[in-house]
Image (cartoon, rainbow, N blue to C red; front, side):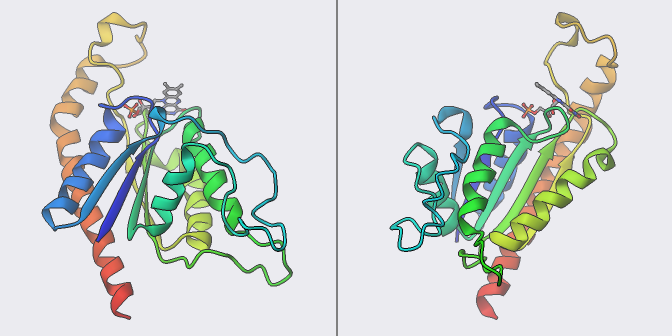
Length: 217
Ligand SMILES: Cc1cc2nc3c(=O)[nH]c(=O)nc-3n(C[C@H](O)[C@H](O)[C@H](O)COP(=O)(O)O)c2cc1C
């Protein structure tokens, strides 16, 4: 089984990537080929509205025609069995990198025909991982729902994993951050976050099982 995790946080060792890595580790233990990609290491843009993916007879019909670092990532996603997309919440949304990736992943599959057909086989099981400062996961429910329904329509069955109340700095005393209870953040990071990583690994195991069942049917 080929699994892939995309880290949409510019930080390569923090909350989002730790959750993704826990999931990938579980996948490796089960014999899967697992790859982690840091979007922040790549040079790419969002959709340029060139419409090469929709031009009749175009060599890139149904695929993104842009030739930047995201091209190989998009190919890897579409050939994966399970793909994870991890993002911190930035101003009630995903990071700019994940947004650009979503545009480039989603738009080529959408056809502007009356039948509303899509171009991808929709056989990649997807996991959306959101990490955030706030404690109430319901705050961004409409965002997760929007992504889940688009991903399901275009890429494949999709589930989400939410991590709230993350620790944002290793030492809160060094940053202007009096609105937070530093001791509570530290405690949560030490006690709850490891449990969340273990839950993420189990959740991911379920995604791989879902893919196996899809193959059997
Ligand atoms: C530019 C910026 C904007 C943010 N906006 C939000 C927000 O709207 N809501 C929220 O809950 N957390 C917000 N956060 C906090 C991050 O989502 C949170 O700390 C996340 O877990 C960071 O992920 P990372 O540790 O993988 O980088 C923001 C952080 C940054 C840097």
